[in-house]
Image (cartoon, rainbow, N blue to C red; front, side, top):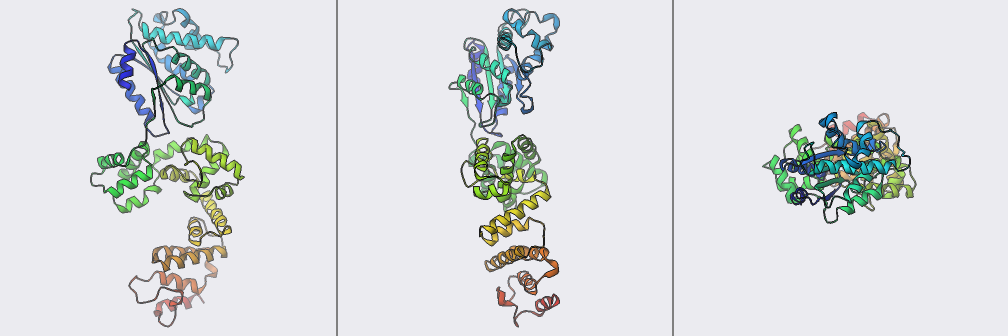
Length: 462
């Protein structure tokens, strides 16, 4: 489609392409490709990018588009650029336009109309000798463009059909915008040229993984797909992280993929979280702590929000593709969950896990699920926590997961080290036995048949 629309624009049949997708799906990459193709074919390219912190700067995106060309042509050759109604944009381009966000009378319309004619002059006679040179206008992250610039882009989009101008915009689906109606008008102006890049398929992920790790097994490739949900940006950054850390594409690495949070992913997540309302940040953090599949009521309790506010926040996070829609609540990408969790300070994260354990325990949740949170929390001399950890350790031991049982018992000891019970010491010692040691794995194993070193360990705590 890009090549076709570029060719049509060169022949004087302008148009609009609207690229819409969540973050990381290659929108900006498509825009870069379009710019490269346009330059190779001899077209002019103007580019700008919306920025969340600049949405209150009137005509900021428009200035980004035209200012480089305005400065490049020099003062003595600007007269042709401002011919006709384009002169109404002269103050804006020269920097003498008032920086107020309000416009008296029809000043806003006059400037928009003037910018339209500046674009026309560039496309129809882009130099002082009146030579025609078709124009491509690229706007990345249009959802963050300031309202006056969005109105100008809409004004342009509605009038390019018979002009050698192609307008290409990108926007994130569901992202808050300064002017939703105008952005929707831009999308409508594209008609059948709305591109929605999809996630990579499992086979597509496998192809990219093996381009980095030729010996990667299919299980590893499948885990990469689940971890990134086919998001191209997350996949590339994950593979880069593995390469930097020297991790091989084996089962052990696959098991920890969801816990990796590449620096670049953190850098993309942190600004988004900081710009969110408090309740959205609290819900995102609560889901990160509780884990995927968390019930809404538990998320609300952990975030200290009422259920209605938590539900609205969860819907807003789903709209911007951070969470799956509906309940239970889960992140779309495990890597994003790891990145969100990494934004919580270690102390606050520990406190959050302690509170999550209290919530689960109060609801009568399984000991092993509660114990997982206690493993992440700092000891606080809580006898109830000791009992939960011991119960979870005994279940793990009975199921043959001795390593998990050891972690549970050791964590229980650290919770109340000055009041450790001989039975707990014995349980830990039993869990640390080699798998082939001739002793029954049960609470009654510390009887005469127990080896003397375990019995001695128990007596030493009396």
